[in-house]
Length: 231
Image 1 (cartoon, one colour):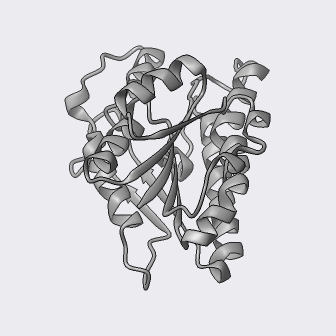
Image 2 (cartoon, helix red, strand yellow):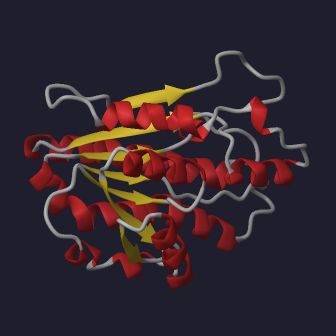
């Protein structure tokens, strides 16, 4: 099997890339810079690494020409978050989150669709519980994730006749470097043991992309078994 992954440098994306590589699948990883590409190539020597900055979606134009043959999945994991009240968020913070979390996945999907159609594969968006419910100080991030949800729904309706499956995974708070940053912004102490592990989220992703061709899971939410205070 052959997969494209964004965000493979850390967190959920890194865990997913390791799990797929360990079982012998082929990887195409998207890196935001040459230095990050070098790091990924060192970690995953069998992978094809493409350089494109999701913060500048124009760099994704034509990236599909660098990929040969069909794809079994494209997994959009990369994302950014910047918390803040609406009356304090700067334009740059809005633009960065909408660009990286929504526009870039849309452009990359467009570029890779011919390959996914050939492979009759799956496009999977790692969204967030913030893509289902928006809380105070999460406005820009939630807006980008609500938008990504709508994009996935429209794409699913468009691609069904091409045999392309479109799924969205909505993890609640997961023990990643992004979550650590969120805790810093919230002024809270970070304890990774309180949150869902990246392996648990990746188990869900693998279940979705490994489904037999007679079924699909359009949406799946991953939450802690026991509600945690203050979350």
